[in-house]
Image 1 (cartoon, rainbow, N blue to C red):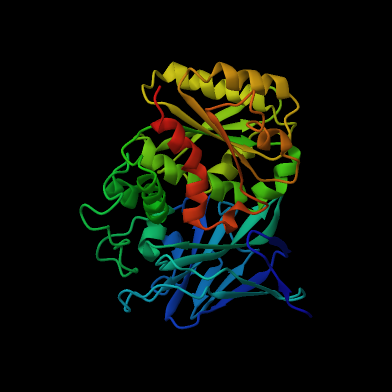
Image 2: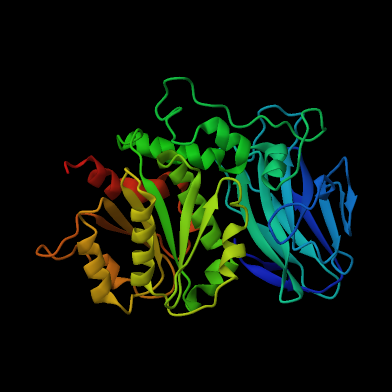
Length: 411
């Protein structure tokens, strides 16, 4: 059978029988491991980390550069199996540059392969794929997400209690910038807290902080909100991890602006926007957990905007609000959206509309096109069809460029 090549975020169905995931790595000694996760995105116990010192657990096993999962034997309490590759801890300073190549084989089906884009930010561990349940069946998703925190950091992120003397890759994280370096120590949430609570976000937090420093607003604070389009046409982007990855980037930015380590998330769907939060302690798989609690529907952007402003005003926050609003199509309530933008200009609210999805976005692109009707507190960023492919520095620069100008301007 021919081998099918997967793109980042793409998935494929699997039969409920053994499946083998093998990796090959160029220029680096590396180890493969698997984490068995419950529906909450966390391991059920420390034994759910399957690696060279604990090679078998509940139908999942490791052998050399291979993970085998007998899907029929994986307990119902396991919702996902994350496959990670980590740099050999006996090679100090080793990091991925060329991405690992993944091959997925299962009897009776075509082989699958996946290779992510190369890495350049000191990544020492890469989540190459995940096996997950969907409507009673199993699927495999190509992930290709790199982290700079090592296997121990990744394990801790998923709820494994790694003791200092436990023989896992060292828990040392990315070296901190030297004291006094641009952006160092200036995040609203202390970097040591990020490294302890969410080591997988340590590098994005620093990257976002550097961009804020470059824009001259490293010391400024804001209450960050996130509105997500939950229209039916966004289903593939939720399924492909694109919305989760986008939310993680906004959370990393928020860690530099807001000291509570959480971002209120509002799902725009029908008449009753659904409000929850994503934080340093629960961000893994959080968007997937939340969005399945609500139905798909025609996104009600205006209702979601009102919910965000109401929450901000009720909080009594003294800092301005930075409301990142992801949009996938034109709003059906354009007049109401314009009215809300006008009415919130004096409330200390900045709106950034981030476009990605399959719909038309002309309304948002043209909000400030007319010289007679501009909104000083509004900007638009077209993140393209795959926002995850935008390099971190360029992504954060696009997020904060207009906000930086606005927050520096005289009241």
